[in-house]
Length: 336
Image (cartoon, rainbow, N blue to C red):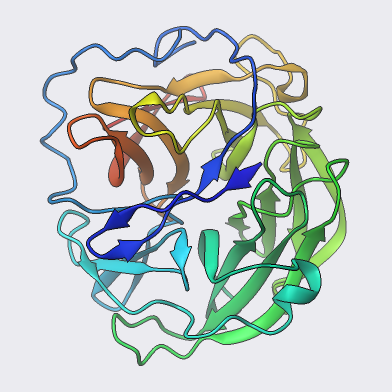
């Protein structure tokens, strides 16, 4: 379940929390499965994003024109941009006011949006974003679109309304969208705690759902959230966060993965254990000052992606980092 914690970073407030009492399952090493380690890790700075770049729940990094863009949790959906994935600059937020439809689905919603994701299809950028309230399963994912993204206020986002919603803990919580464009097909993974992680197909023409969702991971209130659905070769891979975020250096987030020949699962880990039965091969956990990595995505057409982490060298403030995918025998590993 998500709640919000205010973090004043570069005079901008943003954060998002999941606070729920859980038992964190033991996992092995960061590459296989051990409890997240906080030992010193050397040589992690060569590929590090420069400066104090605040970021929580970064969406998929996309490129429009000469710039890369990343949108994050925060008031009105903050955005930063870069020409090289290293040096990032604040741009213009998505919203100037909250779309009117939201309070009908999420009473009491304020202007702090969570975990946006962006994908190109139907000749436009499609941004899916989360709306919820503190510790609630009453949530919604909305959609805005634009033909081109700019770092200035010139970007014209069109509100397309609600995509999915939830109103009880027995349903998949309608937050944390992850969009996969697979040829002419589009899929959305989403969910946090509660009933687990769901996958549903998206109609490319409308950007809205078609058919029914399939629960592919978690359930029974366990700590599964922030899915990332990608395809590599003939397999679909479901990366999901376990543990809890948003507690600075005490955050326990780590990332697990399962794979399937279908975007609707069943997803199993290296040992053949289903993600619906507590399976999941750990691919990234705490390393040195890189604490609680979370909210993975992959930059389309590359083996690069991004996460946020809590910087142990900076009071646990959440920051953006680039990660690299490598593959062996059909299984991924992640590194900074």
